[in-house]
Image (cartoon, rainbow over all chains, first blue to last red; front, top):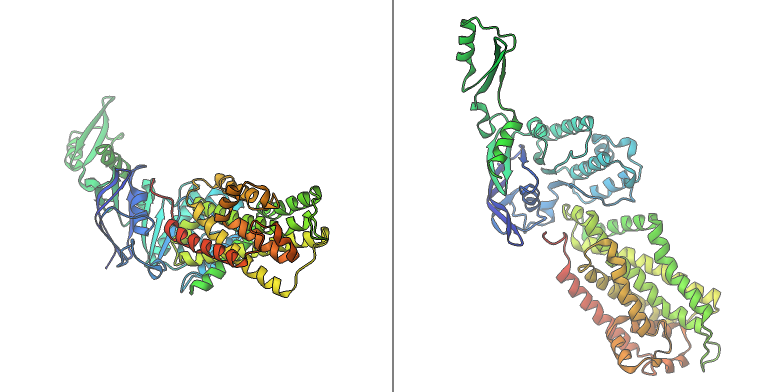
Amino acid sequence: MTAIEVRGLRKAYKGHEVVRGIDLEVARGEVFALLGPNGAGKTTTTEILEGHRRRDGGEVSVLGADPGTAGSEWRARLGIVLQDADDAADLTVIEMVRHLAGFYPDPRPPAEVIELVGLTPKAKSRIRTLSGGQRRRLDVALGIVGRPELLFLDEPTTGFDPEARRLFWDLIRELAAEGTTILLTTHYLEEAEALADRLAVLAAGQIVAQGTPAALGGRASAGAKVSWREDGVLRTEQVPDPTPLIRKLVAADTDLSTLTVTRPTLEDTYLSLIGAHR
Amino acid sequence: MSTLTLGVSRGHVELLQFFRDRTAMVFTFAFPGMLLLLFGTIFQDSYDEPGVSASHVFSASMIAYGILTTAFVTMGAGLAMDREDGTLKRLHGTPVSATSYVLGKLFLVLALSVAEAVVLIAIGAFVFGMSLPDASHWLTFLWVFLLSVIACSLLGMAVSAIVKHARTAGAILNVPVVALQFISGVFIYPVTQLPSWLINVAAIFPVKWMAQGFRHVFLPDGMRVNEAAGQWELGRVALVLGAWCVIGLVLCLMTFRWSRPDR
């Protein structure tokens, strides 16, 4: 079963094409991350899938419906975590969560959602008094209060401190374990690596690589960099498989106390992917 | 969840937010009341009709000003604000319909307009000694009031479509509010002092008819000679205000957008 299916998606703003033929498929229950630099088309793509923006071309199916025409029953199955909302500043946290819960046929209990995002001590505070990170956690609470089948998270942890980010990751893993499909856009590679089953890298409106975090962009078969010091001189060799080289070094009785073997990190792979498409 | 239930739920949070925002509350309510107190005290014109003072005329006419503030400005600025702070985007991502959202705003506007009218009528009655009308005139008040609130709300929504930033909304919306009051017999009365072409321009817009309707309700019948036509023209009041409700609705349906236009 697919949750999201996209074929040849296109979108231009004033003649400038920002999404240039994207194909995507996200399975039910999957956590899928969209990575890419600013301006790559992540937010535009997400907004088209959410039904917030019209597309210029291509086919899109989200939970079996076309977001451009789907109605309120379809929306009741989605959760959208906004990126930069500043609304309801004069309501309290509990008032706003309760208000949104009232829109859905089978909502989570408001107090439970607030506990889930760690805002219980702030439940009765006006939203305008929340810190940036607390405000984003409220956005998450509002996104999940309707028990969505599919959750959109557009750069959800921007402005979080490291501890809040870890707690947020735990929450996402919990939701995923309950079977929620999650589409995540993020700048943070370690976030994508920690959460996503699969990911796609967007650059200049196109998908330049797609796969599991471990195998993205040929990462699994990219080989390794072997370094060691020999007679005080740093030696480095790039090899597809380090085993024969190391065996040779051992056989030659080389001093290996400084030996390092490094494979490309997700960040290296990502940077080389988007670098090639600038 | 029905459209009406969700509309009531929206109206509830709209009211909560409005009353918690002290600045908006003070300026929305206090401004027309303050102007009425000033105008009613400063201007001492008298008319052929015994017992009627300028303060009574202002008390009646300025209910139109009150509604312009609570309906037209509140609606227009509120919508621009909701578009800017993410309220509309948030709601569009939920099962709430545009109709429920607008219903919520209308409940807010209706409550504010009733409160504003009460304030202005109370000032007229207790400060300036304006006598309150009989039952049949209250009935007229009811329909003039409702048509005025609906027309002004819908037009406020429609105008908000051309407002780019919420912080400029108040300034933009107050241009027609102030200009129309000068030519519609609210600030300057009798309106027959104005050049006739200006009176004709005013007759196209709702404000003249709102003020005229409220003067009919609160002033003695003899005061009708001071109106542009020498008559209260209630039929025409209903017709013009009704027409503006329809025009406002059509404009809203044409211009309402959940999100800001594409970058």
